[in-house]
Image (cartoon, rainbow, N blue to C red; front, top):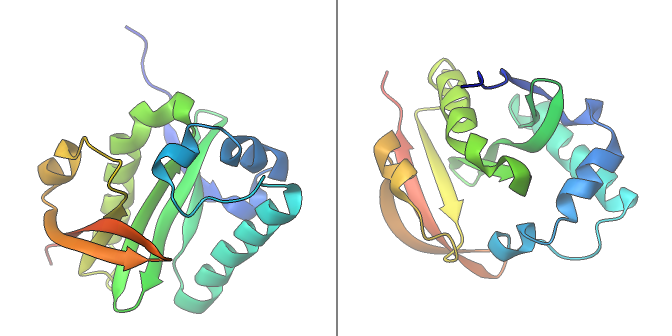
Length: 160
């Protein structure tokens, strides 16, 4: 059995835009990302990176690029949404199986960050397999609207 590649978090600004573009253009992403629109040219990728870097500057926390070994596998992280710190995860479909390991690593980071006492997750109704969230201890809060679309909202309280 092959040992999984170590997961590392890097800054999105350090990733080639072409890697982010290829990821965001993958047709399977649109199935679970109702806010994903357009062809994702390099300008859109640059705008995404700038928006996520602005979160770091404004809030001291933001989104990372996720690496498995030396391979870019997706992006995600924490973003302030009103009073909540929301965790988002956008993996390349070839690496969907890394979601729980990446989430656990991000949650370890969150538990060490005094600003975070809880995390929310917004999932589109197309996501049917939600067992991982309940195993993490997240509870369903019901449906919410974001960007003109309905999402299922979950909350995970972080112990002191």
